[in-house]
Image 1 (tube, rainbow over the protein chains, first blue to last red):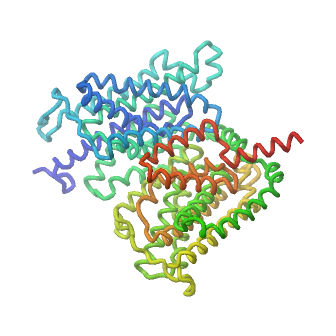
Image 2 (tube, rainbow over the protein chains, first blue to last red; image 1 turned 90 degrees about the vertical axis):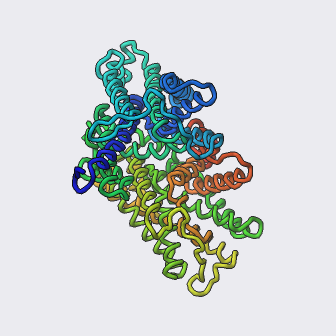
Image 3 (cartoon, each protein chain N blue to C red; image 1 turned 45 degrees about the vertical axis):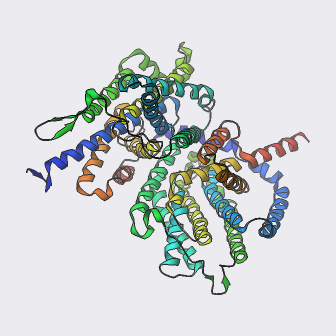
Length: 295
Length: 337
């Protein structure tokens, strides 16, 4: 058997794949956080809860209405996005003139409520969500065995990430968005409906979290706690990447996922610490983050 | 990073608007002292009326919230990782007292020292960024400490350190007697709060406030803001640790619950509900939150939903908190006269 650094290639690549999958979710979630933060100056603590919400929407659609994975892939982000829009209109929009910390605290409360509700009704144990038939099974790539669904997650997350990047960097709507990030008053003076833009941005960010959630449902178990553990790691990712750039958030997400996978190969005990250690090192060397514009 | 600093200092003055101004503090000084006197008397007789364990829990959390408020209310730094100091100190104390057989006072001092050390490390990293980044860094580092506690053998993982002996204070006072324990907790609480009050009203505390109000100006006046922030962080951590150590002795255990991010959130809620930047607010907030949790524990209604809702309501319509709102009314009335 071929070995890399004294470790069988199969095991090495297997952990790398796990890292890549985790990285896909870090990337999608930190992307959503960066999009929301860019315009709203709000750190969306509820992002993890919205991700969990997306997974649960998929699970409930399947168990109660018999709606399968593919429609849920559209419906879950839609429902979570609409939920986000309602939250923004009713509450968040009242906090923009205040210290950004209040936005963080409000969304923290929202996360607790969402998590509490699902915990109350569905307990803390995970619920399995079957892989859709089209993607079940795996492919032998010659050097390793790739479960099809995992391959799909990586592809889908790349599509989502670069789709969002293109939406923001290459379209007219995205140009409004970027302009409003720089100077909302001026953009409003040009006749762009900035409050609507803010609402849609939060909706889009929430929808991204919901989409990540439904994508994650067959990989991880659907559980009320799945979001809160993840969001803290994603915060560390965001500190490492800096929220100045969309591309930075994406790249950092994948990188840290891979770093985590590699650590699992060589020193498993430290695998859930490594992201935080990297964060600490980056803070020492480049306090503004790897892609921070405000260095 | 000019963009971030100007924006953050602008934002910080928002906090300043909500916290109390110096003038208001003077208006209410007399009232404050009367209330403090009444409060101490009430706490002295309380164990004869209310279940002492519940009171001690309240006092521990009130001290924790006051220590947290030293950082948020008076320095303008929102730490999302204070559970590390509270729960960490509880572990250190429990371990020293149970495994090494240390007397309670030594165990508590060790817990405080350990919390201060953790505060020094976490503060060293966190003060490199401001505002929400500061909050996220403290949260991430405290999660790292949580994972450490899950894996480190001395914390005994999911079980926690159980059956910690209360011991005999200074070789004289048997803490297994409920009233002795209560009055010891009360004394430590009062000393802790007095220390916070002294810090806040010292020249050092004034500089902390100036950092809260306008960091850039404090820098331009020649203060090494980073050192002051780190100092405040370490003091807040040590006092939060004192509260945690005390809790470990009272309840005779230290578990993972006290190092979770939920605990960090809880202390924020206590402070926010009571009134950020007020001396008494965090105590009232802590009592209410603990009281609410006790009530809900028997009702079957999930605590997280309740705390989450209070968070949302506080942020939306009640940002001054109970005490802040009270002062604001007093000042408004004083202004009319």
